[in-house]
Image (cartoon, rainbow, N blue to C red; front, side, top):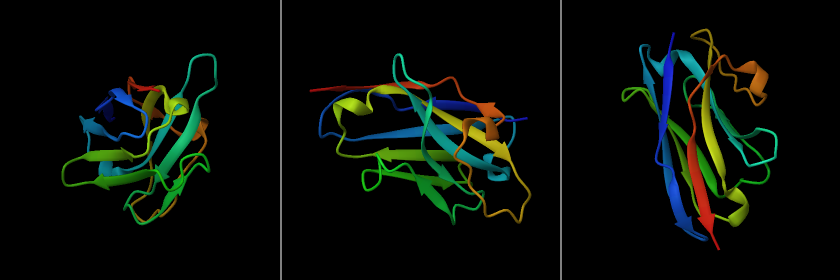
Length: 128
């Protein structure tokens, strides 16, 4: 089974950018549909974006469309979340998640309970 490790979080000013990475250990992430979620203090975990196994299909929450971009480099065994035009309300712990899918699957998944593998999270803090 895959172990997911996020990195790239930090403290950034509003309007700035970050690129989060999610690396797979133990097994290649190319066998997984992947998602990024975030959880702010006192709030439920919510989907940010999702990407199919091949990367051909993506999904974004309405709150991040046009600012966030999810991508994957299966050769590097890594999934990315590019975050631009950061807002204070983007402050949260960001998690990547993986769901093992068949090789022919072009699906993405946007519910947390559809994923079986999770990273430990990386903190993103946006200062105003």
